Image (cartoon, rainbow, N blue to C red; front, side, top):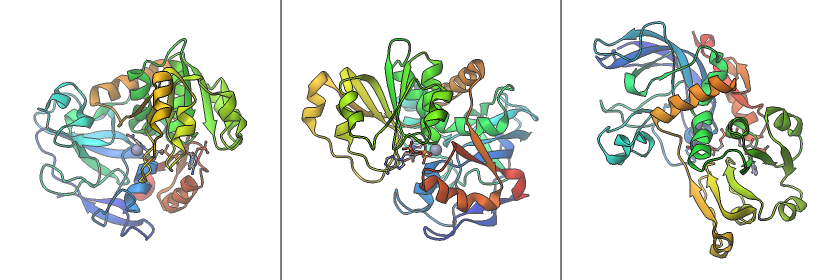
Length: 347
Ligand code: NAP
Ligand code: ZN
């Protein structure tokens, strides 16, 4: 089995350290990818710190992966050596349940195989993208359009699809008012994609410190949630609110900002429950919903949409020895707007 360099969490409380891991031999349906860049998603931090539940250590995370194909199995038809490709949050699914057959593999009824911490089909624990190479079945490998710089493409594989999917499902477009709560990795992609779809976009951030960036990225309006006047001014206003916040919020205050038949879609994933006052839902026939990443077909559609509209992630490229500092900066909402690891620095 090939041994490759990686950065792993030794436990829930220790910093990530440089190490090596084993990747499986390239099977007939597999693609070997030399990873160029890996984004740092807040989910990586929730996971390694055990916030979503206990995991096995050491664990390599990272599910915003881009690179180049360096080997393909004998039965592979979708990818060739030299292709620019990406891998997101899933590396497999059953392929047979009604959700998989509908192209919604993220909702596989037997559970999709996550890019990290999941039990793989061969019984090993999957290890993610903070690593120089990965082996993935071809059906879960995406084509990265040539016009998108690789480092700016990496975050599309999670932050991009996680915001594209609900914006598409709830029909954000001309004539709709969309609010994005939280201007971080997911939030800044939601702003760009909602703007590209033609919606009127408002950012709801803790402060106005990122207002200039928000307007530059495509927002029409920008409000601070630390100001109580924001919640009275915007009452009954939005068709769609995408909440990307990684911590618990007073969700009732945000639900009140929905107009008739509006929906608040939670993509932020704090471990704590979010209590809901049902009368807030009765008013204006409001919907509170959730959404998880997106299917493979939709992820490819999102990458092609981003290429067509000339959008990608705003990134700060870091070397691997900066990962632990980057985690602290993400925790402090000090990210503009995605840290991306230059995996060559792990060689
Ligand atoms: P991130 O870059 O840290 O962005 C989160 C943003 O939320 C921050 O930039 C900040 O924006 C705001 N925020 C943070 N703490 C807050 C607090 N205590 N109160 C109010 N606002 C706060 O994180 P991310 O990578 O975008 O991920 C966001 C969440 O989505 C995480 O929980 C992650 O696990 C989850 N996620 C879910 C899916 C899915 O499939 N549903 C996929 C990927 C990630 P401001 O500074 O603008 O206020
Ligand atoms: Zn993610």
